[in-house]
Image 1 (cartoon, rainbow, N blue to C red):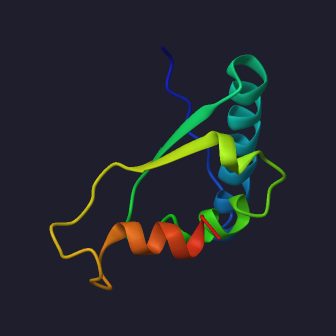
Image 2: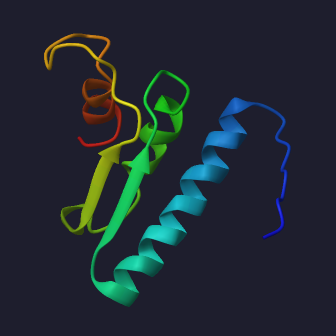
Length: 91
């Protein structure tokens, strides 16, 4: 598998490109299998991309979203990755 490195002028352009690529990949999975899964990181880095991706026309009710790196904090803690994912992506 070849690694492809892409450079962007800024973080906004990178977030736009990633949101578009994820939309295409999720759309293809939904078309092929009727369902899809998206495993995402937490922290603040993916938040701008999540905000763009959540507005994409996808069948979100058929996409399972999972956190890959949840923090060891109580469910209602503000630093919990799940809270950010729900706030920024799963609106």
